Length: 318
Image (cartoon, rainbow, N blue to C red):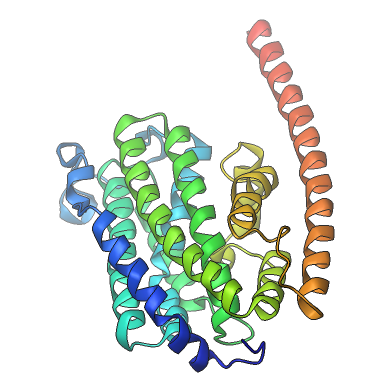
């Protein structure tokens, strides 16, 4: 097929693939209810209803767990922006439109259950959380280059897997069984969504390998998490990377490399011209990223060791 296929051409050619994997998704996806993952008996009124407002000592979560939970929730809150982006890329006709609606409905459960859990358990300041939600959703998120099918489907493949990893590690950091069960449930959704997008991307590689290879390279080398416009996102991302919620090593070894292996990116023999150049660029980028991930891990380990030694000295002195 021609590398110059339009988005309309691609959607038409790939719709049977989308229809098949939509059916697979519906067969595997198990319904669940957000209210089943919230300890409602821990809830109590805030001051406006005759109770007491939030105080930091009410939270049973560590600072890292709180930051991770808020970061994950604010990311999920921006669903209207994501819906617009995926609708613009996929359209609302046929199997594509059915997927857009189903995906949006499933994703919406994540912000519902996360917010209910955090407010009921008083894990975070609900006033600060609402202010952050307003700021983040007002900023929204949008592709700087506009809708484009190949880049879009490559991006959401990686983003869904990255989000799954972040949710799973956040559950572990919470050290609380209800939160861990809830976040594992969310992570399961994210993985199923990733599988759908990964399958569409694989079919696009077969259909138009050079153009899809270029799209993959552009997405990987420019990748940013969708929470970028959150207040204090960069500072919080450093904290979370430092404590293993989501770092460069995980991005490379748990997200990028497994997906690229599934797509057989470095084994393909059907690339030519710009497709081969794009693959070469991708290989160089991955090598550079591996060096950066190694250096970050070494610096982090030294910093954590210093912190542990300092805490031990303080404890001994006390």
